[in-house]
Length: 601
Picture 1 (cartoon, rainbow, N blue to C red):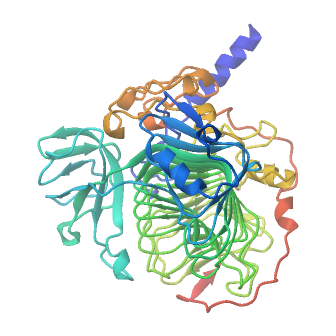
Picture 2 (spheres, rainbow, N blue to C red):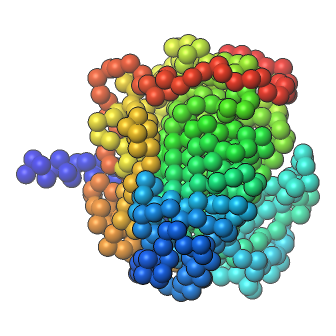
């Protein structure tokens, strides 16, 4: 009976945690997007069939692997896992993965795809059958009803993009960088009701319109290694027009441009990967790039090593979560240290960076300002090690106003630096030199454990305290990515149809991929992990258990709960032993210091 009561109490603890959007502790809610920040679980459509490529005559060593594999991928009509047994497969051309297709290996240490010669990327891209219609009225921030000129070609459940010109842009290719991907939940005449309020205003001066892209959905790449064998200027993985797609449990080695490029997408999950090294550290050498107004994507629990930027975001990327990643080192062998987490301009806005162990978080002015309310929360910053911006752990400049810097730990002498051209920065509870620094808030301010989770993520070991960093943390936990890296096995070993996006799966999306369909889930989804699957737009509350759904959440957030309430271990020294072992100060000076005068805190 005691055990039963304990289980019930644990489940209720997760269910009764503050709902997203209200879970800001005593932080002012107007500093965050109206929709809040959201977890992004994989939505399993179910009904998977597995094809072992060896049964189709596709074997390691074949000179026609790429052509034969693409022919197999093109023939898929129902949800299919294309399984590649262990071995090295040389691809002389890229691969295109369409909807309802998972490319799965036998593990990143067993199945390796070698992108050779002029081979393009492994890509998941939508088509060009787009519907476009003008927005017919100004929309203030917070709007979730969008009047358009003609809604006749749109249906409930469609994913659309609201977009307009920026007021100021640095390059023509970035002019139309304000936008947000939303799902239609209702249509009344030519008025579209959408699933999340708009975070920015839209006015006639920006020529706003609604675009319905042709999507690739319910697809992914997992449990294999990707290696580009020469510098040909291509990405390794390219995702455009993706919805409910993922890259997980993958090693990506030696990108020619970007390892993983995500653009014009929503609900892309990048999780449990080891992303490292590049052929080009000038304009390339990025780990993950979030761009093209991509919305509500999740980059979590990854290991990044020896790259120009580990995670970069620009051109209107919004409402994305980058969390609990380990950045092993900063910079690259060819030049001075670069920023490992980089806001690169053209107005990315309302993104959350939480619980990452990094060196230098830099919001720069390369392509103009970043938009408002990008939030750094409970991160660890060790400081730039090269001569350029030396010692800076968090830097905001380039007219990037209204950024949030909350509860971060800057260690080893790292500084928090704000440009004099930056206004309305919300900097509270950041630990600099071992001392929490508060400004407008009292020193007894309560920070939530997370800004997007109700309790610890399912991949977090029970032995490690969570959250790992912050002014109220006395026992610093090791990131799961840090534990894997130290063990010599940096890639997580999980797959979407058995593990789910957050330890269990939400139900499949409804008609058009929207929130109108029932959640349901599959036998491998959230329900069998202890939490009830979501129920369409209603987001029915989950049952008590280790993966309880969130009450009132939309279906894309249902079934993805947490494994336990936050708890603490006895006090211990901060853990980042992996980072301390790295060689520092070996970079050459690169570039010149840009932007305004700086205030060092």
